Length: 315
Image (cartoon, rainbow, N blue to C red; front, side, top):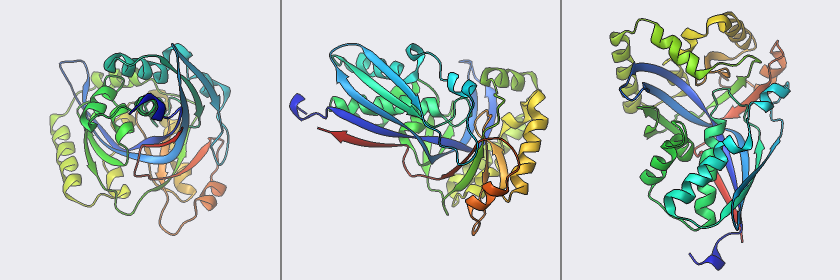
């Protein structure tokens, strides 16, 4: 693609994800754990706007409240961290380095996905930066190469690039796309407390590990590949991180009880938390459910999507 025909501006919608089920397995030789998970893209999304620049990389971050009820506090917004450490900038620099691209890029990021809530907001933003840089420079790479580049930035970035529904293995980066029968409607509650993913893994390591249990998880994942996957079936997978919540266990249990009382079913932690999603039964209005919910947690109403990223370009 000639320089004159390349877009001057790219806008990327970067979708959040849910882990409909997540099992943590044995510790590997590289220091990571084996994982099994069912990823699902959802409608809640950040927006990244990118333009080429002569040199360097800049990022401006703004916040837009997307909760249908309640609001994220200032502490949640500060969790984004400094610009220099943001995955958008890191991803853009890595793509330029890997492909030998000239110049830089200016980014404007509108955050709607809550930070540190197990919804993959940072990974979605990194995937958006990768896709934006590719589009700005007219780069086309095979999917496998794009996913490998994303895996260098984080275990969830490959899924953010792929989107839809997929079974994740390895660190979560080895993906088997599948189809979610019946779609997904869910409500996500994000409590004020947060979970340290590193500490959660350490807590799992301190427990006695059951190989028999891991083999059951492997069989369950294999059954999902052979059967029509539904959100209700996938949620039966459970989430290992729910077992190591420590001081937050009672708060989690109480939140799940309040979600059920509002009319939702099968509440689960997503990722290592602290976001908790629950499924909307068929024929029930999410608006009615959020109106019945008792609590101050921000609530997000989402549906499943078939893509992780959506791009729009301007010449």
